[in-house]
Length: 246
Image (cartoon, one colour):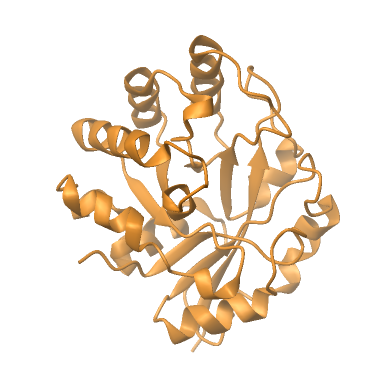
């Protein structure tokens, strides 16, 4: 049974279509034995997202709250098929955890060739850590070509639990399985996230985990099932010492 120890795609009331505060998310994470979360509210291009000031003031939150490691992050919007993002590069570079995603209100879907070009550009962006919920069939791309690029440029591919909810990103589970199989083939690390928009969703990744188990995805490629492995990846990315203060 796949059990995650970190949930690195979570939203708060700063994204106004979400319903919980960061403290509520932390409380639930602690109750469920989740040792780390990344707070990744939507960047400003999405209509009801957080203001840029949210991402400069997020440093008011300590690295550890109630024993839970809290990473300061963002779900940045891809603006166009050249891979431009909706946050200043300097701000992205200063955050702990950057997920890049396509959202239809920001970038209407196009053809597979254009969407492949988009992800190839994102692969080369050193400020992006995670390829967000890319199994949406509306944004179909050349999975094999791009996953090879994700491997080359050190990206993590997200398996997003919201993509498995009925009525959400319809058709995504089949595509997510196809993406995961290619990640296994090319040894690209994945991370299984809730994409929580309410605190009780923190750590709720059962459908996504079941898919990975069904295809016998190697657990050593799932970044957030082993805390030491996850922590090492994060610590190598950030400039400050994330060790708990004794």
